[in-house]
Image (cartoon, rainbow, N blue to C red; front, side, top):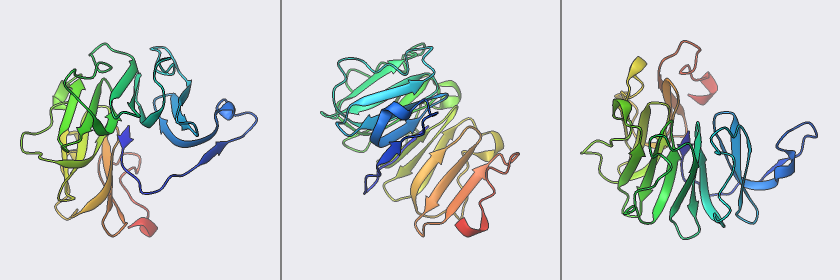
Length: 220
């Protein structure tokens, strides 16, 4: 699951009559979790549909208007209009309990059993399940612009537009290619990682058993 900033708002209209999400109507932000989806509607309230075994699709009644939403595997988090965080759903590893001293944040990304947020001073704070160190940002990370969480690894775009990844390293998914250079967006997947470079081309690395890191020629 990933979170990144955007300079424009894209509006979506979910309209298919056989679509279980049809009654969401017009929304301006969506986040797709495992077997469920959360959307921010035009009035900036949140509505979720799909799997709800942990309550991940049931936003709190006191949530109010939000700025951003991130859906994960069993829990969801939103940045509220006052820039504070509220999470709901599975809390087996305290992934839905933001630290009391977190304060206002700029960006949030929900992973499997853990959550990461970028604070207003651009430092990264993570909490929840820390297997393989997924929720432990490197000491030398420094300020970051964006973060993307996954099932067991995390990647961030640093202030100099380079990428740093950590956590479980199967297939080399946390090993940033030496020729990657500056990037403008990052997304960590289950067994691989992809980035949009400063020239708007795509670079992926990690496992490639299903062709997931083989970028089509027209995107290179």
